[in-house]
Image (cartoon, rainbow over all chains, first blue to last red; front, side, top):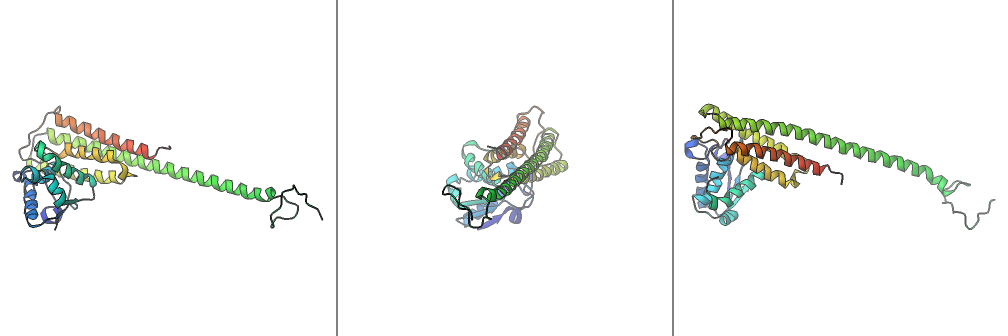
Length: 105
Length: 171
């Protein structure tokens, strides 16, 4: 299953919590969780938006581990992140790895 | 008819009568050396032009990184205001994305793992934590986050400079 942030969520992802706006990391994370319930393998494309804040990415992806109990190993198998900017992909996986031990960053 | 001695160099079949092999080949060697010299000078010029272009691109990127650093520090240290904040945060993210795109266009960027690492640290410092938070409080100019923004911006610029220096090294 494929999910595009720009096409399926918002071209303007912004903020961490629902209280920060309609395109927050928390809301996107809820979308991710729903998709992961219905598929074994989810591909998420980060391209096409007007840029990301690290706060959004950390809440959306790090929150999968911190708030929903996914393990980093499980997400490695089930989640594929694609983006033209490889540093963005690496940053997302860093948040997933760090989330269990450090909490929000 | 001239009789050739056993020790005289044998002329190749196409040699005009009376000329040694060296006399026939020497002009060709001269032309080959001239051509080689031209190729070497041309390659050196191409290399110099590439270096100048890359370092001009670096200067442009540096200016944008420092401008974005200032905009980010302003964002974090001024009191929040919904309308202005949204626009400024949007500008920071869009400009950050554009700068990263230009950095990725640098020569041999795929080998620049140090640049990638510094880019991530820089992005985290500018847009992590309370970035775009509705409850964000204005920070003081000597706050740890403000210092981090300065440090990561400088570190990113230095890593790009080091990468280009390595790319254009002679040996």
